[in-house]
Length: 259
Length: 322
Image: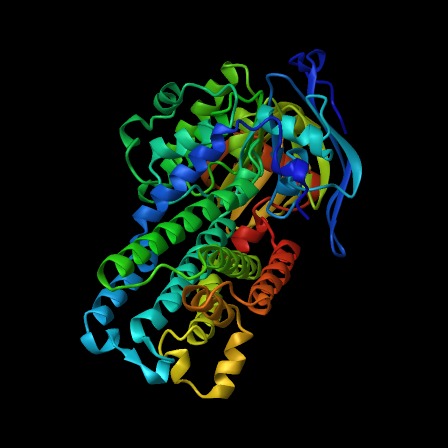
């Protein structure tokens, strides 16, 4: 277990955390697929799909919404998944495998700071990615301001906490870079399926839609969609996200090893 | 086992004190009843074959592992206490056997990063030129040679201006020239007042560098003292190796007063002893019609000491793998 005291040792210069964050950004930039995936692909999907006139028309099958309106929460879920589940665990598992976390354990800086720096980097990429996506969607593709902005922001925040907690759990369970990559993929594919990445949720059979609302990204997409179209999302969906965050977070702390 | 040090280091303050350390991994005893003290300014060697408990011992000393029994004080601090360990990590720099630096950061960036971890860091530029990495500053860690990586690991261990540097197998995998360069480097670091705890399985490295050596075998210290004391303790003396022109009775040699041992290693014969060993052996053989060919002679080394003390060659397992 990580004690608070061991997270903020008096001997470690606080400037060290800024350096760690800076160099994690540098490393992310030098590992291109990490950042481009989160920032680029959702935007490309939005622009391509948004340029098809038919997908901008309201569809009865989608509850009177256009495909683009339905797809924006899915793309938000995609950005958070790419950063939290694909971007976060791999470097951490690699650092552990290569002894970098262990090497840090012999300095005044606790290895938890490197984990913190990774969180800062991936959360930043996620936030920037979502901001760009929303700005483009509003400016070019007629996305309306969400009915409930607090609900919209809260739903996204809870999604980030839940998905990043799952990412940390992957980092805790994977004993090496290879395992991290495999586990990330195994976790990400069903999560994204239930977010409607490949087939819109509205087009799926009702049983699958019911299952979807119990998955982290299914609940997230529904909550974000509700905040956009109707108002503050129902507590049930937010609680599902919170539950995933707590359980995955607890397990990640329980199983995380620095070496 | 402790022998009085002739170099007077015993009068200097103790910076590392380990007493009756014991560490188990499951049912395996990794370290058993290990005690030693390191004095300020010393190069202290922890020497022994692979699996002798050397790394476990230093991991306990730098607070990466908790011993199951025994006490450790490093500069008066207890590595087992969370509070002491933090301070310890500002005073001790470590180069670990298995540890890397971020592959895609350059030498300059790695040093800049580790420099930020300490309140009173060393001048990075000076350290880099001392270590001969000046022209590699903008190379990525992954593009460095094995020797350059090791030197950067040493630089990173020293960047916090530590009072003690722990160097674990720092010349493993280096070519002979790079090893000799690294040895000079370590002597240079000691000259700057840093106490060095050197873990190695190379006998020549320990003999060349260390003021005192703790010889580890199977989790225990089997001998402790200066390299020359250990050699003397194990019988010291000389050895002569040759290929005989024909068979002869070993008793011809063992009957000689200067000879302490005769050993056959394939076609070669190794005779250990004292005094005018070479002349005595060759003349005795010649008198019996046997010529000694391909003769080499030498004084006893730590390698011989280890063999005498444990009955095994230090690299026995390595050799078996070849």
